[in-house]
Length: 121
Length: 121
Image (cartoon, rainbow over all chains, first blue to last red; front, side, top):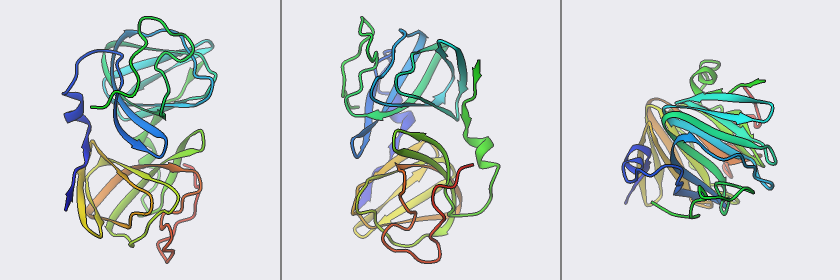
C-alpha cells in the first residue's frame, strides 16, 4: 500500500483567507496547522501551552512586550506559554503552527480575528 | 530586545554524522530534532507515541510492514504509535522530527544505530 505524505504547498493552495488556521495533521494530542497571515494580528497569550511557529514562505515578525523576533522561511520559534505576542507580516507569509488540539488562535483575547477551531483541510 | 529565531540551515551546518538526532527546540514536553540520514535504518516502533517526520532537504521513504510512503522536501508524515517502520534514503536527506522528550531513535529495537538522546545543538 502506498501511503500519502502531506505536502505543504498542495495544502496551502486549497485556501486563501488570512489568519484562519487549517489543520493538516495530528500527532498524539497535538495539531499541525497551516495559516496565511498578512498585516497585524491581535496581542494575545496562551496560558496553558507553548506554541511553535515555522515559516514556510515569506517573512514575519513576532512582537513581544519586551522585544521581537524576525523570522523567514526555514526558521522556527517557540513562544512560551503566558507570553503576550503579536504576529505581524508586511507581505503575505505562510506558516506551520504546532500546538495542542483545542488552542484558539487569539488565545485569551478573543475578538473578530478569532477563527473557527479544528478546521481540517 | 531582539530574540533569535532558529534557522534550520544554520543548525544543519553544525553537524555531519548520520542518524544522530540533534535537539533544536522544545515546546512543552515535545522536542524538535534535526537529523541527517542516508541508507537504511533499522525496523522499529515507538509504543507510546506518534512521531512526525518533516523533510527539509532531499527525499526519503518510510517503509511499513504493509507498504511505504515517499517523501520529499516540503512534506510531512505522522507515524502512528506501535506501527513498525524503517526510514530509508538513497541520498542524504535532512529531516525535522517532532516527538516527546525522551524518545529513542531506535524505539524498541536498540542496536548499534541507537543514538545518544537529548543532544542539543
